[in-house]
Image (cartoon, rainbow, N blue to C red):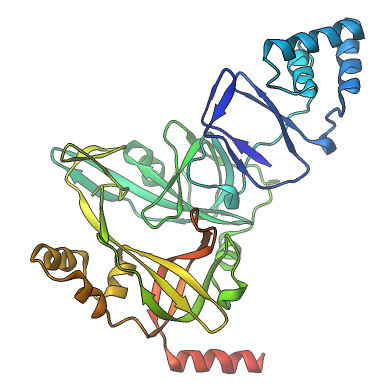
Length: 382
């Protein structure tokens, strides 16, 4: 279990994130911002009695004295920690290390928006050319790097001075890199986006590190065709389905930063990006609907160009129509995509409100009958 957190109060935690992984590890206790982890197979001590004996042996104090210190620690913390948790805290305060070092490095599949202090070892799958941005008298560069391991891929966004690592060829496709102290944000398509911030990135020359090569990562992370009924949370897949409904939104677009594409907040009529300050926003379309392939149906969310393709209008055309007082009901009713079959490709996630699975579509393409026939014939041959 990889465990990362944002901040702690003296007697509680805020923004804690647990990324499911190795079930043999268990979160024990926290104290003053310190998380105590146990990994049984790594030699952690089980049970308060064993802890007391180990601390007594290592510290030179008697077992009764250790037990008293544990009781006092529980009283000090108003009973907010268990006896075992208090025992670990006492051990640490006496300079006794009960736990062997644990590897807190996460896998790509465990990276979710909101995580901080992220350590990741990954393979460079693809490096994109930097592009320039400008706002008023300010300008800079941004570059994207696709990283991957045996669990999937994630985009690493590099900004301004960070872009030098790409321009100088510090790493290329196929290199192994280590990200330390990064954080994960949600991009404008609802996908995790790794950022450095105050963290760092370095090339790793250790040949003993086992990671798949870029072509293997691309193959394993590629979308897989399946029925809607077979989709599972976390899948990146594709399905052939009919778009049976578009939900009407009172405002089918939102403001984004023209530099990084992140959503911006309105304050007293002005728009502010967390990273780039006050900006004149761009607009990004958002739609949602229902798809059905005969095995099940699923809610799907479309952003940006994908939403524009589904609606058959650009976000500029849509805003112009609405500003001219065009009836919104009419706009949705004239959507030519409803009732048609498409190939939908995207990430499967669980809706926080309904608890149901939904697809965040990255790509929507017209259904090609001839290509589908060729695919089916190839399946029969194989």
